[in-house]
Image (cartoon, rainbow, N blue to C red; front, top):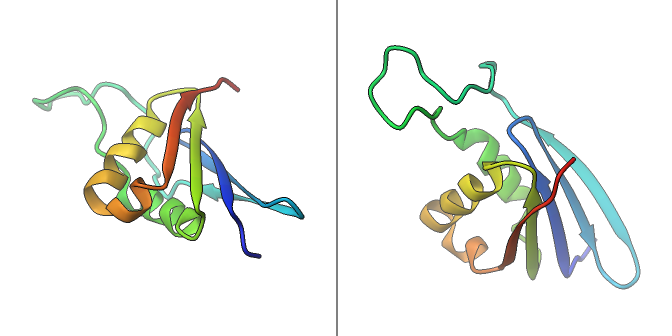
Length: 106
């Protein structure tokens, strides 16, 4: 399916990818590969107190959205912002397709 647009809803557990154009739409769910619980504090480690980014998860999401012409990233927490930072650093051509990053709850 040739898609013009993608809405990507993402949190730390899964990403819902909705591809659409004027004629049709399709969706997919991508689960994180992390087996660690989502914690904001890392005991016994010096640093920002946040778990490291999940590169494999972000790469899977990137593959799912890379063919779109425009991407809207939404979600309830900080994962959407972490993904955007990851895209800018590792996939700048995909990052340029992101038209906005917005907070949307469950």
